[in-house]
Image (cartoon, rainbow, N blue to C red; front, side, top):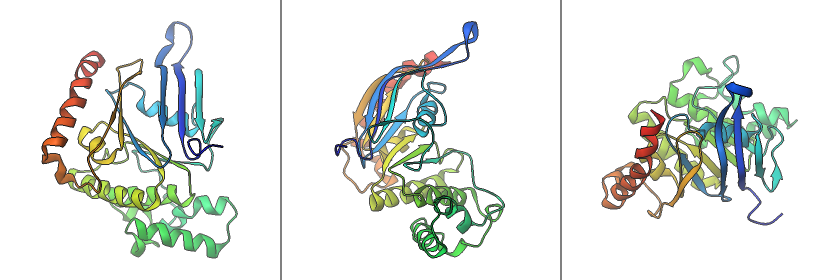
Length: 261
């Protein structure tokens, strides 16, 4: 396995069709791109273009109709511990405490209680929830639940973190807090991240690279490197370099959004 394969995601000529016969819908059409190891790659595009479908394929929760989806150089054939998924909705187990949710993956791996405790302590500290280990999800805010979801995904020590609009349901202030948190965690752990969002500001703030998709059937329209130095703060949205980058992405999306509607 080469360094480029280790921790990387490769999408090769992937197409995805839902349904059969006259009811068949082509969701993705001949999509190819790479998510480089340890990089933060963001995918944007109009509603219904197949952004989330790509993550589901990478997670092994769906199967490609044509092409190849490779993780660490191997064909994806189902879910696996080398990938962690964070959804937009809060997918915690409500009957488990915060700590038990974070330790769910390590428990399934057969790790002992002391090792599981060390793992949950580490990631709860990283997401700022050390004092909430014994709480249940219903006792947490939406932002706190997403922190737990991120900690739970990281606790499995995946090579790739797949994130499907994880902050989409949060208010603006909480969203900014979560963006800063995620950047801090990513810079600390240096996981490979594939992140889907509708928010162009969020894409530029978080990403090393932004992949712009067309309207359905989704194809790759452009790949844009974000050369704004790190660390980044939401206040950079006021800088001329950021505004120019946002205008460029919006120009690419404008026709696609019109077509999607």
